[in-house]
Image 1 (cartoon, one colour):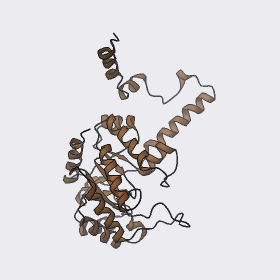
Image 2: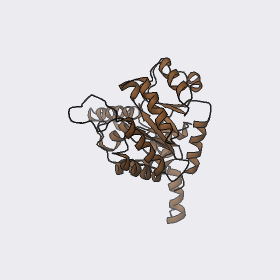
Image 3: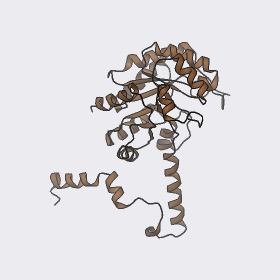
Image 4: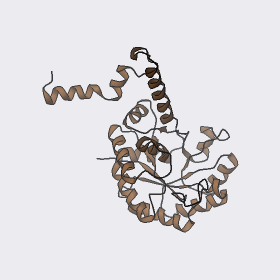
Length: 288
């Protein structure tokens, strides 16, 4: 499939002067809903993908093929630009190359690749660690070298500000920028002081994974070159709560017609493209 148009649209966001808040999406229907509501982009977090595919916490047990398959199904369903969290690239720098090949083919507009030591090592539960700067640079070089579509956005990601220091985050961002990546994703810039320091010392567009009350101001963020700021991933937990409420009510004897919070038939038809399928049935199967 041809993904260039949506990648060009996302690059316009990175090159612009505004900050967007993407929709947290996890399947074809949420992609269509976010697109219909006017979101400029969707974000598939690694933790959300693990929940959607495995029903498991974010412990790097999801495989690359499972991740790419989910992404392809989502991208086939809508034209919303989709940014994904590719975690550590599923291994070393060679695995990063394979990750870029698979996710580019699946239609992402951008992928983040982080320098956290993943999966957790023996005895490291609850202790986040970073790979070396040199290994991080190698991964970024591998990612840039692997892409075939020049419009695919490679995003370097570091949690150094929350693990080591802001100074380390800046040093890593500068080193990753030199590899030819297109943007930097930061975790842990939870104050204006930290964000100001990073914005002053670096040049690439910024994506934020941490949006605290201290920096939650789109105009301020835009002046600091933040082009995308994540606002959490509430969509999947909301769906889990809705499913629980519905099943509990049914189990307790509530008639289907009286269940609360159920999408109407019209909404279901809209987001499953019922009208399109009805047209195709008539056109191709003579169902009139």
